[in-house]
Length: 219
Image 1 (cartoon, helix red, strand yellow):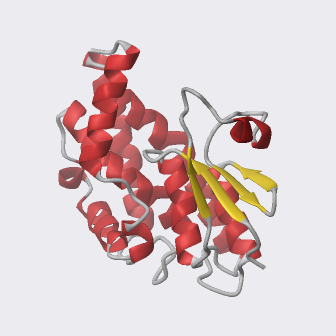
Image 2: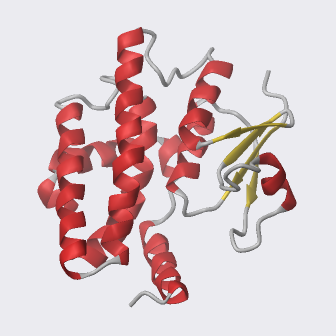
């Protein structure tokens, strides 16, 4: 069933980290190909001609684009182990809603925190914390968003944890002070080998963003 699995990715991408976690949870062997986003490979442009973005999951020569779609595909194809989406249709819909919420809110707000200053940065910090508190409320007292089991929403959100340090450094605030349960959840997830091996080092992310800001001319 595994066939040939290739992942076109870029190491700091929280979206690629989702796919790496899902593949690790399912214990799927795959070939990892690091992309230079300033000089995109012919394979990337061929496999994702619409968006020309990573990550791209290639299974037996067929591309699957967009990280949440990839995670669902992995869960459906390798459905004999480590389920990521719950069997109940309502619970599945709820998980998809919160994963979509992460996509619509957290990336853009986090980027605004490190890209902007002054009032714009303050507004982004405030909204980011509000969104993280909503997620913390959804987590409740459960160990994972899927209840007792690590699942789809956990996979969608936990890669942002290695970017939190960057948001905090540039924004001069503490996410743990505002959302202690969420950080406890992230640390719990990091105890899983699939997560620990898939997430980038937080200080390397910070250094990457420092260089990126210089390259973009953002002071």
